Image (tube, rainbow, N blue to C red; front, side):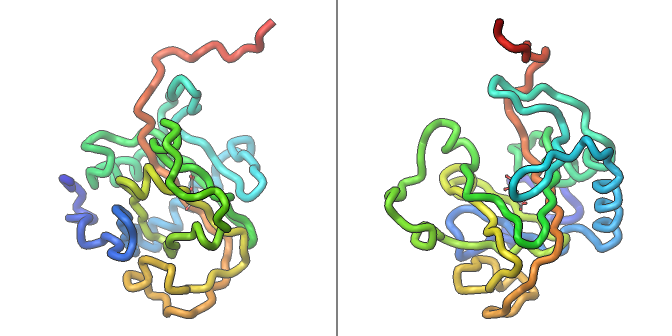
Length: 217
Ligand SMILES: O=C(O)CCC(=O)C(=O)O
Protein backbone atom coordinates (compact mmCIF):
# COMPACT_ATOMS: atom_id res chain seq x y z
CA UNK A 1 0.00 0.00 0.00
CA UNK A 2 1.57 3.30 -1.03
CA UNK A 3 1.23 5.93 1.68
CA UNK A 4 1.64 9.59 0.78
CA UNK A 5 0.62 11.06 4.12
CA UNK A 6 3.15 13.01 6.18
CA UNK A 7 0.97 12.34 9.25
CA UNK A 8 1.35 8.55 9.10
CA UNK A 9 4.35 7.58 6.93
CA UNK A 10 3.31 3.90 6.82
CA UNK A 11 0.17 2.09 7.93
CA UNK A 12 1.73 -1.38 8.39
CA UNK A 13 3.10 -0.77 11.92
CA UNK A 14 -0.47 -0.05 13.05
CA UNK A 15 -1.95 -3.41 12.07
CA UNK A 16 -3.92 -5.15 14.85
CA UNK A 17 -2.02 -8.43 15.10
CA UNK A 18 -4.79 -10.32 16.87
CA UNK A 19 -7.43 -9.57 14.24
CA UNK A 20 -8.11 -11.33 10.92
CA UNK A 21 -6.80 -9.29 7.98
CA UNK A 22 -6.99 -6.43 8.26
CA UNK A 23 -7.58 -3.74 10.87
CA UNK A 24 -5.19 -0.81 11.26
CA UNK A 25 -5.60 1.23 14.41
CA UNK A 26 -3.80 4.58 14.66
CA UNK A 27 -4.08 6.23 18.11
CA UNK A 28 -3.97 10.05 18.14
CA UNK A 29 -4.37 10.32 14.37
CA UNK A 30 -5.64 13.85 14.95
CA UNK A 31 -4.57 16.36 17.61
CA UNK A 32 -6.75 17.71 20.41
CA UNK A 33 -6.98 21.05 18.58
CA UNK A 34 -8.08 19.31 15.35
CA UNK A 35 -10.62 17.29 17.32
CA UNK A 36 -12.06 20.44 18.91
CA UNK A 37 -12.31 22.19 15.51
CA UNK A 38 -13.93 19.16 13.90
CA UNK A 39 -16.51 18.87 16.67
CA UNK A 40 -17.26 22.58 16.34
CA UNK A 41 -17.89 22.07 12.60
CA UNK A 42 -20.03 18.97 13.16
CA UNK A 43 -22.23 20.84 15.63
CA UNK A 44 -22.38 23.96 13.42
CA UNK A 45 -24.24 21.97 10.74
CA UNK A 46 -27.86 23.03 10.28
CA UNK A 47 -30.34 21.01 12.34
CA UNK A 48 -32.06 19.40 9.32
CA UNK A 49 -28.71 17.89 8.35
CA UNK A 50 -29.11 15.42 11.23
CA UNK A 51 -31.07 12.21 10.72
CA UNK A 52 -32.25 10.52 13.90
CA UNK A 53 -31.97 6.71 13.83
CA UNK A 54 -32.94 4.37 16.65
CA UNK A 55 -29.43 4.07 18.15
CA UNK A 56 -27.60 7.17 16.89
CA UNK A 57 -28.04 10.31 14.84
CA UNK A 58 -26.07 11.03 11.72
CA UNK A 59 -25.16 13.52 9.03
CA UNK A 60 -24.81 12.32 5.45
CA UNK A 61 -22.22 14.18 3.34
CA UNK A 62 -21.09 13.71 -0.27
CA UNK A 63 -24.48 12.88 -1.70
CA UNK A 64 -27.23 10.34 -1.41
CA UNK A 65 -26.20 6.69 -1.76
CA UNK A 66 -28.86 5.30 -4.10
CA UNK A 67 -29.09 1.57 -5.07
CA UNK A 68 -27.95 2.58 -8.60
CA UNK A 69 -25.00 4.61 -7.30
CA UNK A 70 -24.12 7.81 -5.50
CA UNK A 71 -25.91 11.00 -6.46
CA UNK A 72 -22.85 13.14 -5.73
CA UNK A 73 -22.66 16.46 -3.91
CA UNK A 74 -19.44 18.34 -3.16
CA UNK A 75 -18.10 17.75 0.35
CA UNK A 76 -17.74 20.86 2.52
CA UNK A 77 -14.08 21.99 2.89
CA UNK A 78 -13.92 20.97 6.59
CA UNK A 79 -14.64 17.35 5.62
CA UNK A 80 -12.81 17.39 2.28
CA UNK A 81 -9.62 18.06 4.20
CA UNK A 82 -10.01 14.83 6.24
CA UNK A 83 -11.11 12.83 3.22
CA UNK A 84 -7.85 13.87 1.54
CA UNK A 85 -5.78 13.02 4.62
CA UNK A 86 -7.28 9.54 4.87
CA UNK A 87 -7.22 8.92 1.11
CA UNK A 88 -3.48 9.83 1.12
CA UNK A 89 -2.91 6.72 3.23
CA UNK A 90 -3.60 4.70 0.07
CA UNK A 91 -6.51 2.86 1.65
CA UNK A 92 -8.84 3.40 -1.32
CA UNK A 93 -6.46 1.92 -3.90
CA UNK A 94 -4.85 5.27 -4.71
CA UNK A 95 -8.24 6.92 -5.26
CA UNK A 96 -10.07 9.40 -3.09
CA UNK A 97 -13.03 8.75 -0.83
CA UNK A 98 -16.22 10.57 -1.80
CA UNK A 99 -18.65 10.01 1.06
CA UNK A 100 -18.71 10.72 4.80
CA UNK A 101 -21.14 9.78 7.54
CA UNK A 102 -20.88 11.71 10.78
CA UNK A 103 -22.28 9.55 13.59
CA UNK A 104 -23.17 10.69 17.08
CA UNK A 105 -23.81 8.16 19.86
CA UNK A 106 -24.96 9.03 23.34
CA UNK A 107 -24.16 6.63 26.21
CA UNK A 108 -26.41 3.58 25.85
CA UNK A 109 -26.71 3.90 22.06
CA UNK A 110 -25.11 1.76 19.36
CA UNK A 111 -25.55 -0.02 16.02
CA UNK A 112 -27.14 -3.44 15.74
CA UNK A 113 -24.72 -5.86 14.06
CA UNK A 114 -24.89 -4.68 10.49
CA UNK A 115 -23.49 -5.93 7.21
CA UNK A 116 -20.27 -4.38 6.03
CA UNK A 117 -18.81 -4.06 2.57
CA UNK A 118 -18.84 -5.95 -0.66
CA UNK A 119 -19.33 -9.44 0.74
CA UNK A 120 -22.78 -8.51 1.91
CA UNK A 121 -23.75 -6.56 -1.18
CA UNK A 122 -22.84 -9.47 -3.45
CA UNK A 123 -24.93 -11.75 -1.27
CA UNK A 124 -21.90 -13.60 0.11
CA UNK A 125 -22.96 -14.17 3.70
CA UNK A 126 -20.27 -14.72 6.34
CA UNK A 127 -19.82 -18.41 7.03
CA UNK A 128 -21.34 -18.66 10.48
CA UNK A 129 -24.13 -21.04 11.43
CA UNK A 130 -27.32 -19.07 11.98
CA UNK A 131 -28.09 -20.78 15.31
CA UNK A 132 -25.08 -19.31 17.11
CA UNK A 133 -25.70 -16.80 19.86
CA UNK A 134 -24.40 -13.27 19.53
CA UNK A 135 -21.65 -14.07 22.04
CA UNK A 136 -20.53 -17.13 20.03
CA UNK A 137 -20.44 -15.06 16.86
CA UNK A 138 -18.45 -12.31 18.56
CA UNK A 139 -14.97 -12.72 17.07
CA UNK A 140 -13.28 -9.57 18.32
CA UNK A 141 -13.77 -6.02 19.53
CA UNK A 142 -11.75 -2.92 18.79
CA UNK A 143 -11.42 -0.08 21.26
CA UNK A 144 -11.82 3.22 19.40
CA UNK A 145 -10.33 5.98 21.51
CA UNK A 146 -10.95 9.69 20.88
CA UNK A 147 -8.88 11.09 17.95
CA UNK A 148 -7.97 7.65 16.64
CA UNK A 149 -8.23 6.29 13.10
CA UNK A 150 -9.47 2.79 12.31
CA UNK A 151 -8.99 1.38 8.80
CA UNK A 152 -10.80 -1.84 7.90
CA UNK A 153 -9.73 -3.67 4.75
CA UNK A 154 -9.70 -7.08 3.11
CA UNK A 155 -11.81 -9.83 4.66
CA UNK A 156 -12.46 -7.92 7.87
CA UNK A 157 -14.13 -5.29 5.70
CA UNK A 158 -15.88 -7.55 3.21
CA UNK A 159 -16.73 -10.74 5.14
CA UNK A 160 -17.45 -9.71 8.72
CA UNK A 161 -20.40 -7.97 10.32
CA UNK A 162 -19.93 -5.14 12.75
CA UNK A 163 -21.93 -3.38 15.39
CA UNK A 164 -21.67 -1.26 18.51
CA UNK A 165 -23.23 -2.67 21.67
CA UNK A 166 -25.87 -0.36 23.10
CA UNK A 167 -24.27 0.08 26.53
CA UNK A 168 -23.17 2.79 28.94
CA UNK A 169 -19.72 1.24 29.57
CA UNK A 170 -17.33 -1.20 27.90
CA UNK A 171 -15.33 -3.97 29.57
CA UNK A 172 -11.85 -4.40 28.13
CA UNK A 173 -11.80 -8.17 27.80
CA UNK A 174 -9.34 -10.44 25.98
CA UNK A 175 -11.52 -10.06 22.88
CA UNK A 176 -10.28 -6.50 22.36
CA UNK A 177 -7.77 -6.99 19.52
CA UNK A 178 -6.00 -3.62 19.74
CA UNK A 179 -5.47 -3.31 23.50
CA UNK A 180 -1.68 -3.13 23.25
CA UNK A 181 -1.96 -0.06 21.00
CA UNK A 182 -4.28 1.72 23.44
CA UNK A 183 -3.63 3.52 26.69
CA UNK A 184 -6.33 1.40 28.34
CA UNK A 185 -5.63 -1.32 30.90
CA UNK A 186 -6.95 -4.86 30.30
CA UNK A 187 -9.85 -5.59 32.62
CA UNK A 188 -10.85 -1.93 32.96
CA UNK A 189 -14.45 -0.82 32.63
CA UNK A 190 -14.65 2.32 30.50
CA UNK A 191 -17.73 4.49 30.96
CA UNK A 192 -19.03 5.94 27.71
CA UNK A 193 -19.56 9.62 26.96
CA UNK A 194 -21.07 11.09 23.81
CA UNK A 195 -19.04 9.82 20.88
CA UNK A 196 -18.76 11.35 17.41
CA UNK A 197 -17.24 9.33 14.57
CA UNK A 198 -16.64 9.92 10.88
CA UNK A 199 -17.12 6.99 8.47
CA UNK A 200 -15.13 7.86 5.36
CA UNK A 201 -15.61 5.65 2.32
CA UNK A 202 -15.38 5.50 -1.42
CA UNK A 203 -18.63 4.71 -3.18
CA UNK A 204 -17.34 3.30 -6.48
CA UNK A 205 -20.40 3.98 -8.60
CA UNK A 206 -21.19 7.67 -8.99
CA UNK A 207 -24.19 8.75 -11.07
CA UNK A 208 -23.88 11.69 -13.42
CA UNK A 209 -27.56 12.49 -13.33
CA UNK A 210 -29.96 12.00 -10.45
CA UNK A 211 -32.31 9.05 -10.96
CA UNK A 212 -36.00 9.87 -10.97
CA UNK A 213 -37.06 9.41 -7.39
CA UNK A 214 -40.77 10.13 -7.84
CA UNK A 215 -43.54 7.72 -6.87
CA UNK A 216 -45.02 5.33 -9.38
CA UNK A 217 -48.48 6.25 -10.59
O1 LIG B 1 -19.14 4.89 14.54
C1 LIG B 1 -18.47 3.92 14.26
O2 LIG B 1 -17.39 3.71 14.80
C2 LIG B 1 -18.94 2.93 13.24
C3 LIG B 1 -19.86 3.53 12.24
C4 LIG B 1 -20.35 2.52 11.29
O3 LIG B 1 -20.24 1.36 11.52
C5 LIG B 1 -20.97 2.91 10.05
O4 LIG B 1 -21.18 4.10 9.83
O5 LIG B 1 -21.23 1.98 9.26
